[in-house]
Image: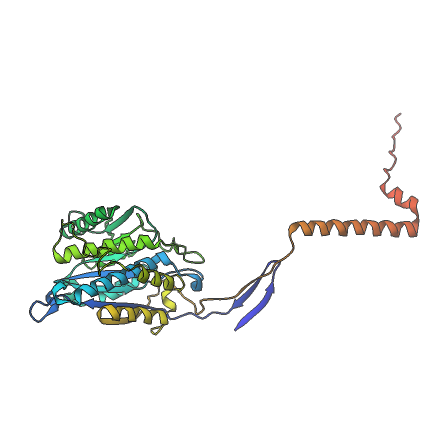
Length: 386
């Protein structure tokens, strides 16, 4: 149902009647099972690596957001690939389960993450040592931030910070800690890890941003604005996460040991990162418009299946926080017109033509004297005084 043809001076608009969309969140998870203690791997502690993959913009078809949060998705996939190589050999498999979660609903108060966590049973949530959420690590130079909700004195927070800061120092940059206490009475969360903290799960967010943007501030325009990334920045971010996790899993804290060295079989693969960046930079990812069998979602699922086990895809309805309509794109016709200078010149020519035409008509009908009298100043009348 279209109504088209409202052509204004420079732009033609095409108006489409829209229908309200039933919006859903889709999230994916995959496991790397640690070295079993007895016969039950669920007795092992778990480390979760999480990234939100969706974007937001008033023009959904233009919202690619390579750094919000395409960079986090690329980093998570590469970390999963690296640890799948380690965990494929029982001799190098750690005594931790690794959970990789690709969540949606990031721009919508991380609502998808909240629903994903509530789908866990109590036993699984209690087995999580900590979760590291990766958010926007694609355009930084010498500094990253770890955002936490629990006090810096917390034993797990101390351990996370020590692991990350020591690895960062060896790689030649800084990692800073930023603590922000959760306001339980306010449902709004600033970072993804806060949804974990609300369920009493230790978590942190690694980001290039020192402060969280307001709700939809960075992505609330026509397109998602954070779409410029530096491939080298993502590679350094992947090394930081992978080495930090490895030191925690294998008990190498305080040791200058690089498991994922550049000259090893476990080196970060820049071609893998570049290929996924190309995909993400060309794929609009506004979550409510994804179907369960969307090609992009299926590509993420296949990638997790290549590197992890027990891959699961879930779909959950979006709460009535936002209203979405059924169209992701529309036509905007722009027409090229003459410049303002041409308009002024045309006005001058038309004015001159009308003056000449008027003068010709007056001369031919009433004579030259009448024409001259039109422009002659009338004589002044002097008033006689007594």
